[in-house]
Length: 164
Image (cartoon, rainbow, N blue to C red; front, side, top):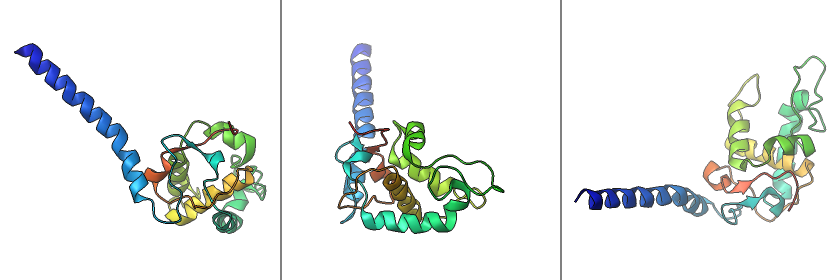
């Protein structure tokens, strides 16, 4: 009797774990609206054209207005002399730092930590548009759907230092 109860308990735990791991991806794909990029599986790459030219343009405007003083006009971390040092947010250095992490992690970081003198003031849309601009400056290709401002949908897109 004890062995069968243990087997049932283990089976229930395994089913729960599978549901916990697969449900967020399925829900994220359902939540993505028209015109927004849906991850092409749990390991879509940022090199697969996950943002649009229009989204990059909006991100460029956000960068010029809010980010340039710290991260510099080239997004290389060379901001104004009177500003504290800041990291590069594009190209090789940025990609190495974020390699293996999801776009959801980057989006959440930008949304909650930037700008450092007034964190959390960017809207979801401004945050994801800024991320799209980082990708554009990093020479990632554009696509025909925008990155959605939704961490669940972004969780299936992985940042890679270079295309595979």
